[in-house]
Length: 346
Ligand SMILES: Nc1ncnc2c1ncn2[C@@H]1O[C@H](COP(=O)(O)OP(=O)(O)OP(=O)(O)O)[C@@H](O)[C@H]1O
Ligand code: SF4
Ligand SMILES: [Mg+2]
Image (cartoon, rainbow, N blue to C red; front, side, top):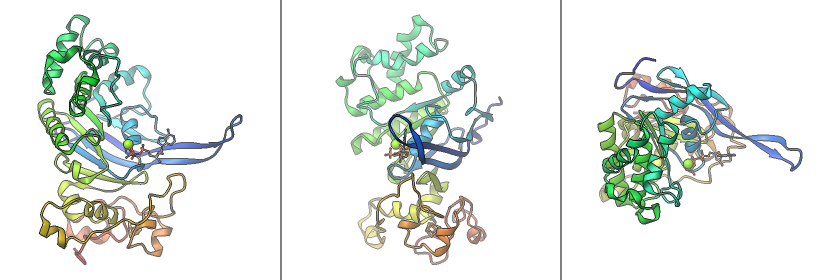
């Protein structure tokens, strides 16, 4: 396994799907359909970068996260870590790979066991990987980790309820760092926190990224949360990535109607700019992933939809009619009529 250089892919995800069977009957369960939670997702996570993964509730973000850390098994597709397919490894080989890909969870209030001390919570990964911290050294390592995430090492014997939400998320991050991973999959790590605390936790994560050379898959339902931290952003809708690009491509030159709608929902700090920016209000709810619309799954809420959108599935490619403009306008966008907003033609 060769070491990827900075900027080279550390994770390569290809055509990943997760279908949950829908069953009927109590005694004799019969499959009557499937929830297409993730439906053909491909992206790279490059060494040292932060990839933001954004989309409304139910679009499959957590399911992608769980497959990356092997809490869920893909229905099909592959996840390669440093070139090796980890979606089909033996349990033993998997154990050593899993060490390198850790998860930080959404809700600091429920993801920490209330009956364990902070020292035991942060040190728990050492039970599975004793080679990282031999028995006698564990408390010292946990104290170091508390210090690294900005908590007083003297708090080692306290319980989760004795901390604030922001502090608990720091505990979750310390636990995620315990095994010295290379990749952290953070599933809405700040969504449950107050806005002022969100910034502190994001700053901490950025500092840790620089210090330890981490790669982040950073999940959020709101484009504004990941703006500051992301190098690239993937926008998901109903189990698929609909637009993928650098922060400049997504925030300044979005071409997919769904991304444009999400961006127009983001508050603009400058009041004069706010008046000028036309708001796009998304009509209706996200359709059920058990019965997604034909063709482009966004078409039931898209103000630009044409008959073609019901018949063909748009692929996540650089739209051919935008190729001539080059980046940042030309970047992958799964829309037949992709164009910059208010641009007429870019
Ligand atoms: N174990 C499961 N069995 C059946 N359906 C599931 C299961 N887990 C998730 N789903 C469905 O898969 C879809 C994607 O769920 P997922 O949790 O990945 O969404 P999400 O983008 O993380 O949403 P949120 O922003 O609310 O966390 C949803 O429709 C959900 O109901
Ligand atoms: S392909 Fe059609 S329905 Fe889908 S986003 Fe583009 S214009 Fe809208
Ligand atoms: Mg989720």
